Image 1: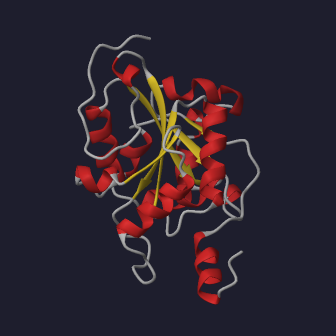
Image 2 (image 1 turned 90 degrees about the vertical axis):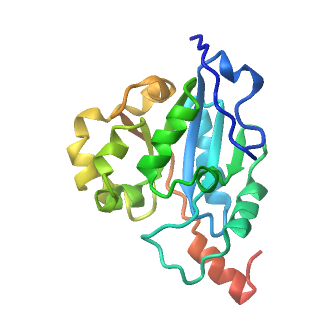
Length: 217
């Protein structure tokens, strides 16, 4: 599909939106998180999302802060961005602090601004099953479900609970089969899919503990 609108530039977003982005409908996945630190689990999710959804790019969006996570032990935004960049390739997988640069703190606001800034992009929001459980605690969470199609990523010990939770039950009729992954980016929200991959046990909490103990491989 052709698109003639031009995206508004965002400072310091290296590698994002190739030159043809103002003419073609790109499919871009958004994986937000603290990345404290980034680890192979994040990379696994990014790679699987690109493959299953046919994404042109996936952005690792380093959050400026998460009110649902304790500040104790949280590295600086610059350190977390550097960590995310170490697992990104700078071409298909982009690490960015775009939320900080846009001045958005809440997911719904980030979604709204990105859609306005990049009118020729089909965005897909990636969310871990553990976050889907907590989603009803987020501000205006229904707006989040209705803003962008969503890919739910399995998480150990959380996937079944998430599928039985309030958010999933309320939007059960909008869940698409895994085989519809290549079409998800073009679907109108609400629409969501559970990523058909094995749960990855990699944890930033465990990685931080191993670093402190000096046992990181």
